[in-house]
Length: 240
Image (cartoon, rainbow, N blue to C red; front, side, top):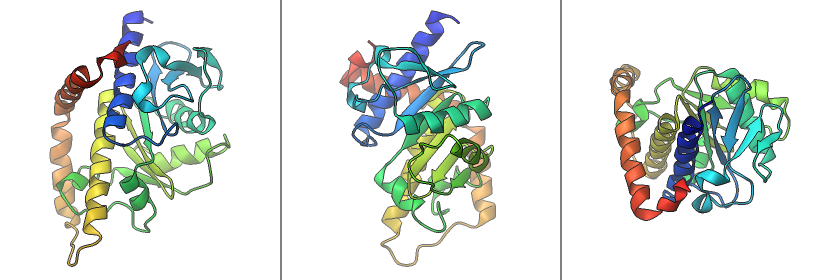
């Protein structure tokens, strides 16, 4: 594996943590993002338990294998985070990055019977692309990994009932973009819940808009580069 490649992945994952802090997605020391490292032996980068998102730098990230061993770094990880992230990384070859959050809007929508509603253009991007996973308590049981993977299926996101949100992507940029707009859709739904006369879009219209979004996914890297420029202005030390 090229050290240059790992350096870029470290930079991008550290950027995701810093952006999450700027956007108010953090939950003190809890929740976690990961990115798979290239190589024969499956391993991934994840945050060291004990640092707040606003503190994380590229060099702070630790490397964990699929057996739960820290193979690089001098810190431990959140055990529930290992359960969730290792499950997805082992099952989805395309899910190089996994992002999990406990945002107010995400947890609120995850507590509803119907889940994400098709209320707006933003939610249309997730039309039939979100799975749902039944809450089993804090994810300390490795036996839950198979059920998590089944719930996720081939979707780009997972709503963890009574818990929060999860997104996956071929890169940190992709997974972060998906989480940003999934959370935005939840924020809109939460705001709309206090209004009268809210109507959902017809399924065929949501499907059409979803296809349009998928055709424009190449634009995600432009959004990511803009976010990186924001970090350069506000906290450039994240790359250290």
